[in-house]
Image (cartoon, rainbow, N blue to C red):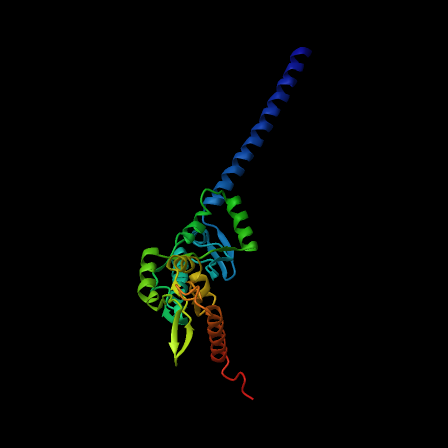
Length: 276
């Protein structure tokens, strides 16, 4: 009898232990189900203006993060459509701003970036920001959102131009002011032999000009510049007329011509120079 009583007590303890384990498991299941329901059911989310449902709060997943800029344009919290509209409005303003290109003979040719075939290169920037939310769980999205809100995200606004169109435009509108080099001459004026110095060439470097405009044009105009000087190829003729290297006194005649030119250039630069 004592042995049976002892076994009955042991069984009771085991049964009690099983009951406790079952209760604990049941509580855990209830907690997991409750958590799932809370996440999936419409719940209230606090906002600055009051409360909105989770269905409305989900709309925030379709907007850009706070503290986001594209080329300095603030697109924080906007939908992709709103952000693109704001960026393109800024682009239109810059692309239609008139400025001058300084070419040969210090001539200034007026134009706009749009006329030079400018276009938005990284037009997927907004979609790229939106894609940063993809493939991340709630904790990762929350962490990323807070990091961007704190540190900010400023993507470049890249603008370039069609090289072929640009080169053609420069050739037709700027190269027409190029100056070809002329050689020096030995002439007789009033019965006196003189050297008439040649003029240097001023030729627009088309390839280099195109690269400068493609890489720096948008940044320059958007920062407020109104004139861009394009690179010229300048070649200076020798002072001694060709074929007169051994002419008696040619070096003195060349030196005299160079002095006269320097005096003329100084007088043109400062008309008041030498005036008492």
